[in-house]
Amino acid sequence: MMKSTNLIDWKSTAIHVPTVFPEFSTVLRVWAPQTIYDDKVKKYMVYWSMKTGNEPDKIYYAYANKDFTGFETHPKQLFFSPTNKACIDAEIIKFKDKYHLFFKTEDQKPGIKKAVSINLTEGYQLESDQYLQQTTDPVEGAGVFKLNNSNDWILMYDLYTKGKYQFTISNNLSDFKAIDNEVTMDFHPRHGTVMPITDKEAKALLGKWKSKEVKTL
Image 1 (tube, rainbow, N blue to C red):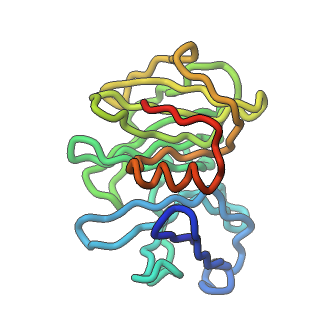
Image 2 (cartoon, rainbow, N blue to C red):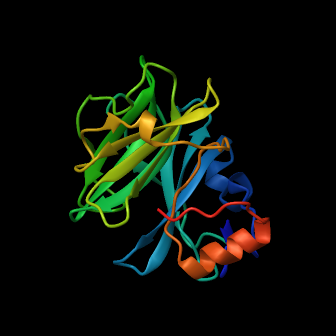
């Protein structure tokens, strides 16, 4: 768990789930943690995929403590796949008073699907059997963000066998189309996240990492 007040200087704390929570002593892996702020309880919720024993990977959550240095609640399962197959790489977005949980399936045809709930921590139902990726290549690590000054949303995912991302666009978080010709990147992140920052924060980051070029979108 990492935190910063300026996006440059970071403090981190490692949580070894099997040690902190003995009921998860058979955990084999913890993947792709994310966090979202819960407006109702005024706390940050951390969610991730976890494989326990012979069970498939499932999506769990716990609430962070005030200092964001550990969990103050025990992990609970967040999403129950109707196929009881592995689910990884979750991403939760609040849109029109509902929570949209994007995830990668690991069933007969791996890909990105979405479940929706009116509550952050329970009640997620698979929206449809539709896969959201706009490619036949293997994908993982879905990330979703809203464009500034627009009603459109971007769904991006890692084409991990090709070492690049694909970007898609939607105005309803259900129907996406690829915009490969509209995006160029000169770096190759993995499981990336996009977040809004201020001009002041951008200048500080550029000063720290000595970027050669500044682009205003």
